[in-house]
Amino acid sequence: MFKKLLPLIIVALLIIGCSTPTPTLPSAATPDQVPSPKTLTVMTHSSFAMTDDLLKEFEKANNAKVQVLKSGDAGKMLNTALLNKATPLADVIYGVDNTLLSRALDGGLFEKYDAPALKDVASDFKLDAGNRALPVDYGDVCLNYDKNYFDSKKLDLPKSLKDLTDAKYKSLIVVEDPATSSTGLSFMLLTSKVMGNGFNDFWKAMRANDVKVAPDWEAAYYTDFSGSSGKGSRPLVVSYASSPPAEVFFAKTPPKDAPTGSIATANTCFRQIEFVGIANGTKNRELAQKWIDFMLSKKFQEDMPLNMFVYPVVANAALPEVFVKYSAKVESPVIMSPDEIAKNREALIKTWTEIVVK
Image (cartoon, rainbow, N blue to C red; front, top):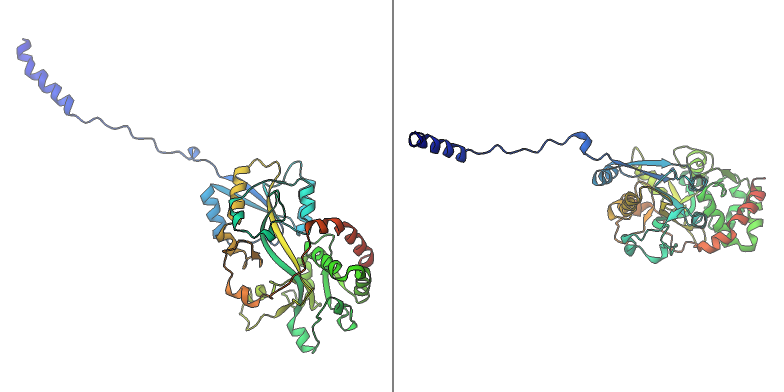
């Protein structure tokens, strides 16, 4: 009987042995298996801007969602950050400049980060030896003027700060309040450095000459300045040497020349450097580091000039033609060390306020 069944058994075994087992396919990934993007909050001043595609590139590469928390002028932003230091509102803080740097560092606002890209940044910009505040960009605070006004009135431009007290410039200038604006603070520090012991007399003369005070740069430039889109009544404003390119770049019909200019003669401009730092106590340290690396990358550095109209600090970053063509060349800006600024800042603001505002 077994001999009769043997051929059938052999055939059955051959069929089983030759059959291909069905592979076990991996199950399709479900949405809850993909990590959700981490939110990175970046606190910054209201002038922060960057190309949308570049922001999306960072978000995609790091599976992140960047929330930009614009908090007014740099001075107001810093005050907000310091008031909320115990429970940080952001993971990264960008826009504190050298006029306010000591307040941020003394307040323990930042954590140290030795970013690899610092090797490509000139030492002149590295004002914090502890690498808590890392330089990102710089600019020069200078007087800007409305070309049409001065041409139509056949009025000579002021060549020095002292000239601003001349009666022919009465009611023509708007400055920012140094107590609330980093731009205004830069200009006040400039006048203290240039005028020395004549600081008080200079500002008394400015008040007598009807200087107008705005709370921040945006109000001064876009509301009071006659050369901007706001078409205000003042043809002189404290702004930046790199402001004129913006008037050309954003014009609906590109003008043959910039409608505004910068006065960049000796002792009329102040060098301002902006910094970024990781907020002390952040729970997103790794992602915050990546954001800082990103800000110091060539791509971001080359994106800044036509978005925020500032100069990059990374040596190999190229500048756009329109930026170079219409920015004033400031050969010798007034520079003050952080220690010198910290030593005199509060007393100067108090004196300035008593003379000009009260």
